Length: 370
Image 1 (tube, rainbow, N blue to C red):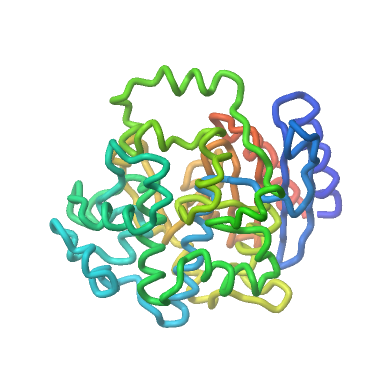
Image 2 (image 1 turned 180 degrees about the vertical axis):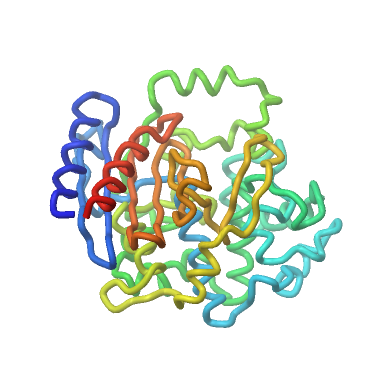
């Protein structure tokens, strides 16, 4: 593993120099030790501000990994269980036939309310009570637990409201106090990010042609069943002050270093901190539901709050890997088989995970050869 830092650095430098990427961070841990922490490129093209290891990126759904982790830390402490019915914590959620829905159903995207209403605006997304009331009153598309579809926005609000009802605190505060703080990265991973910190963020930019591609998509595209066009995660959307301020735990603002440390503290101990027990790790990282996504039509395998399989591979090819990718190409994961954690954050929003696949492949090869 001695060359991993140099190999990763050379690869991300080339991605920036070629013009494929604007700015990136990559952090890798193995067996609790950091073995790579590399940055390249520019965080803000307007000012020329460079990416540093503590630069936060709005990495969209990569933040779902932090959302799930908060839930697991609270389960570990006995605040609720995976089989706890949501109505026991949040009575209003039982409307329209969702009484049987459990925490497990939310974590496996089987609760049955994957979309948000067509008229939802970015301003609505920033209104916590409004979004939670809307989702609580939604009619399920199927009996909870029967089928699956990616709950792009509802995942974060449902887990977040369960956290709020059980702790009395917003999920952003629990993330800071019970996950990020103990790991020393409380200033590098956020749901709602204080406006005073926005100057540290990497500015998002759309890959050339992506805005035009999005505009050309018909309104009845399955993609817009997850959320209307106005709430689609583009660079313009992700650079909005109100969106950055708001708790929208379907996504998050983070450094690669923070996410790698978080996943490392799920696998084991990092600098004396362990977030969950070995028994819980086995439970949360194992396949919990497989099926066809009812919106996108692709086969999916979910662990408890994470996707199974390394990016660029099928779940059955790398079943020991659990983590999350985000719109635009950022990605973070852990591998229980090798004790490795990996995180890549970037600010140019690409339609694929090409950079993450390339760098994750370099890391996997280095680990296999070590």
